[in-house]
Length: 149
Image (tube, rainbow, N blue to C red):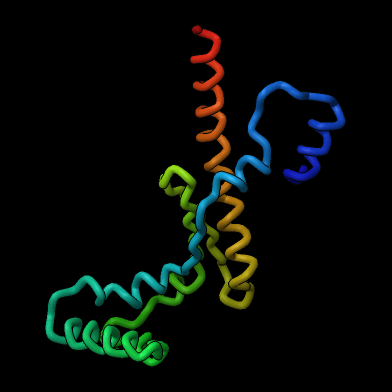
């Protein structure tokens, strides 16, 4: 059953007690970010401290200063190629309103089936699945504190 179908059934059954809704989840998301694992491999040189990395870092900063940094996004280490499997693993990072982060991922088995947009949707759905219990706990805590008074 899809989340929208579940929400419709909850409303149709008149279940009106305090609860977390899909709209609550969406309104609690302040920002979201997507990337594939290959990006981490591709840009690991940003944290290295050697001559090749420092030269590349300087090049990126210079390119960014002129607002044209697409040419800077290259693999600088030909001896360390990106494994194909990392190109098939998509991550979604949700930043919640309070600053807490939640991640979701989507792994594709066959490169022929990889679809970036679908991977982002699945990764986001998996991240949202982790938000439900967090918001459920927060709501239960608020109700508990109210009951104690």
